[in-house]
Every structure is written in structure tokens, then in C-alpha cells.
Length: 431
Image 1 (cartoon, one colour):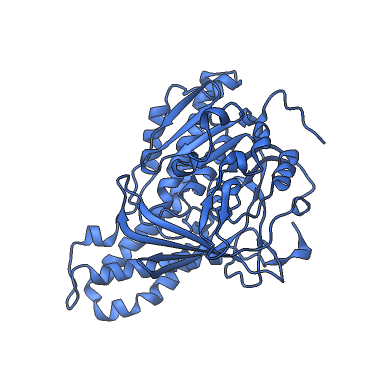
Image 2: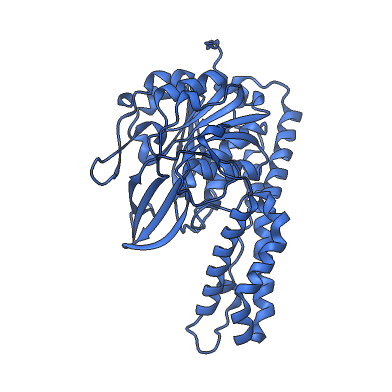
């Protein structure tokens, strides 16, 4: 069935009200710093976007493929392909930074799971879709099928322009016009690209076909549409690992539109979630279900702190208080953000009855105040190292506190994984 394209649906966020479809494979990510493995995490744009949508209470289905070696439990079960391996990426960083504050990164695809075929997609309609492949798993035919079954589709350009060295899997890019996807752009709602990826397309040309959002890391993002553009302010962040920041941005941007915000305001939500993601290694903790499992984390954390209690009893209660405060802050971020989004939505509705294309791409009065409100809602927990200021005996300054925080972060990720208890399905049990 061919949809009527006279009125592009990419400018109808008021229609994005119920359920979305995320298409992209889960991955195993291994992070190297100066040649040393520093983390092994769940990866893939689908995982980061799922975390954001879960945190913002946006309903969605997911189509993703993994191999029998898939090492994580997730909220949406992927299809397990018995004859394939899970897509694996090695990300190599060094400690040097360029003039823009970015650490040099070399990304290599070590293994690739099977592609997602048009026949793998559900036979139903969705209010919005997100094409977010990372390892070449989305073909033009699959994207075209998404355009058929989704009212509006968000696309990450990395799903379109990545190619991989045949010898070592190093990620390179091809021009968007040479990618095989260019002819589909008039049917795409929103195309997201990083500043580094944007050089592989002509933004002035592409903006005539769809809304283009270019992210600039610590400098925020720019929204381009056929009649204008907006520079959207960033949020301060202490960058630890940039992996997944663009994915979280896209998830936040889509969630903002789903919840009824104008495009510039939705881009602020994207910037917010991007800034939260870079402050930690691996999948960020956005899921509101974490609050329900807080007692589990307390029990696990107590076990990990026994050695600390026995050795440093005078400091134990203080550290436990600081950690509990950090956990509570993480659990409540998404609730405060949702409150601010709802308040902003009602403010815009009360000031404007019309929701036409021009209005949705207008920077409505109160945009700066909305940014300030989100900045207040974004509570970055202050670490024990920063606030304690004490040196424990027989240890370098701050060493034990840092070890405690490292264990706490790892334990938090384990609890996040335990939150979702769905069994992994085989390919025969297609969603």
C-alpha cells in the first residue's frame, strides 16, 4: 500500500501518540583505552534508544537480531539466529583529545549478525518508526517497508552510510547519494547525523526532502528544515564515554515529539539525554523500573561493601548515605524530566490552538525557560570523591572512595540487566 505523500507526515508529531517500532540489532561493545580493555557492554543504537523510551514511558516494539552468544537480558527480546553470532564492535580510544574536546576513536566491526529483512517486520501499523542499524543490518528494502507501515520514520544516518573494511572491519562512510537510500528521503520524517557524519551529505539539499538534525556534541545540535533552522542549546556534561550519545539524543528527540512537543523543544530533550549518556560507560540508567528494584541494589551493594565496613567502620555510614543519595537521584531524573515535558506541552497548548507545520517548527515563547527547567531536572549526582574530601588510612588520596564508586557503577548495571526478565526468543518466535 502506497501512502499519500502530498502532506509529509514527518511534521505531524501530534499524531505520534501511541506505539513505535525500533529496528536495529543489539551488539556487544568492547571499549579499549590505549589498547587496554576498559569495558564490555550491551551496545547498538536500539539498546540506548530503548533505555530512553522506557524512561519516558513511550510504548514501542523492537525488531533486533542476535546470535546464541548474546550475553545480556533486555526489556525487548531479540530474535536469536542459531547460525549467526551477535554483532560485535571494538571501539579504540586514546587519551588525547582534538580541539573540539573529542577523544580519537577507531571503530571496528568484528562480527555481524544477520540483516533485518522486510519480512522480519511486524504486519501491523505503527505511529512512528526508528531505523537505527549500526552494522549494516538495514537494507533499502527494509527501510522502505518501515515507511509503509509507520506514519513517520526517524532515521539515523549511520544506518545508511556505514561500510566496513573487508580485512579488519574498520568503519568507514560513503556519501549518502551513493548509499542506495537517497531516493527514500522524501518519505523520511527526520534524519539524524553527527557533525562528523553530516559531511557525507549535502545538508542544503537533504533539508528540502526531510527535517535534518545535526548533533554537535558539547555544542548542542542544529535542526534544519526546508524553511529555516534552529541552533539548540546543549547541557553541561562531564564526558566519560561518548558511545551511544547520539542514539540517546535520537531517542529523546523522538520521545519529545511523541509527547506533543514542538520540534525545537523536542531537540532539547534529545540534548538532555545525550548529555546524561556521555557521563558514564555503557548503557545509561534511564529506566523508571529501577525505582522498583532499588531494594535489590541495596542488598547487592551491602555485600560489596562488607570489606569496606570491616576495614573502615567510621566511614561506612557516610559512604552508604552518599551512595543511597546517588541512586535516588538517578531513579528520579526521568520522572522530573517527564513532569517538565508535560508542563511545557500544556503551556504550548494553552498559548496556541493551531498545530500546523509552521507552528511545530517555531521556537515558541518559553523555549529558554524550558531549557532552564530541564537543566534543573537533570541532577548529576556528585561523587563521593568530590564531596568526601577525606583520605582513608593506608591508601592514596581518594583511592578507596573511587574503588567504591567503581563497584557501585558496575553493580548498578547488573541490577539494570536484572530488571528485565523476558526470555530470549528464537527466530521462530518472531515479534
